[in-house]
Length: 88
Image (cartoon, rainbow, N blue to C red; front, side, top):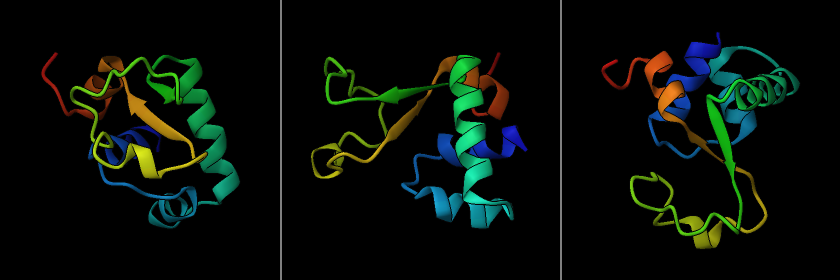
């Protein structure tokens, strides 16, 4: 299921936690826990307002300014490999 979550996030599609939970047929609380687990494992990083303009390649770069205080996650290279979106 973690791979499925990473695939959704790696697609660059903007989704809420509830949207993702619905797609995975799980609770929003479980998605939150999976996000935390993936971040601890180095598969995701939370993008903050102080992201030092690492916008190159970020799927949310064009809309970042309007996200306000919502959390945005970036899939790391390690996460992309697990999701099958890059070659090893």
